[in-house]
Each structure stands twice: as structure tokens, then as C-alpha cells.
Length: 127
View 1 (spheres, rainbow, N blue to C red):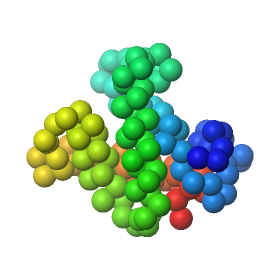
View 2 (cartoon, one colour; view 1 turned 90 degrees about the horizontal axis):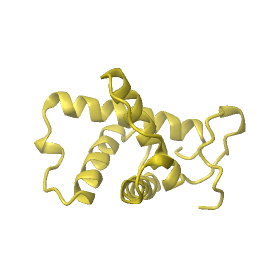
View 3 (tube, one colour; view 1 turned 45 degrees about the vertical axis):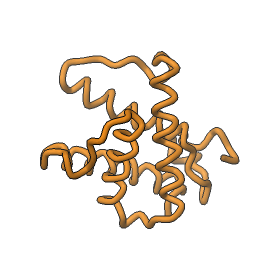
View 4 (cartoon, helix red, strand yellow; view 1 turned 180 degrees about the vertical axis):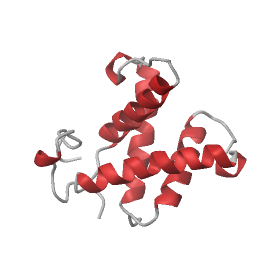
């Protein structure tokens, strides 16, 4: 990616028309997971405190999502949810896919995809 500052959390200095950055997407996914875990009474370490393997997994997932957004429209949010699940499960070596999730898990994945999509749009990376 052309700028490592993509993904600033301040909308005022977001980059217009900047391609998505896989690392920042991975960090954002982890941030969402941290918030969900906190609601369940559990704490997860910050991204930078994760082991190299976990960071690598998140970066890989983020890069695949960044690539996917280059060929899909922001109206494809349901497909984004499926992609996130399939990419993550594939990275783990699991043969579990979207169809194997319960309806509740699919709704949660769609909610996460909506958060990621809204953030990418605010960053000017998905139009």
C-alpha cells in the first residue's frame, strides 16, 4: 500500500481514494473482537501485544479483505461477511465455512462486516 497511515482513527485526516491497507484492516478486526470480548467480561491484549502468529493471521485476513474490496462494491456487505469468515477459517486450516455457521453466528459476522465496511468507506478506501 502507498501509505502506512491509512486507517487513522480520526475521520478528519482520513485519506480520500486511498486503497485499503491490510495491516490496518487486521488491526481493526482485532479491535472489534476486543470490544466484543470486553462485553463478555473478557479482555484480549492489544494487537501489538499479540504473538507473531496471531498478528500474521490478522494481517493475512486484512490483506485478503483489502484485495477483495478492489473488485466488489460496498453494497456487497453480505458477501464481505462471507469472505471474512471463509478467509479466517481457511487461514486456520478449517473446512468450516459460511454455510456451517449458525444463523446467530452469521448475523454476528454480518454486523462485523458492516462495521468494517462503514470504516473503509469513512477512510475513503471503498467506494
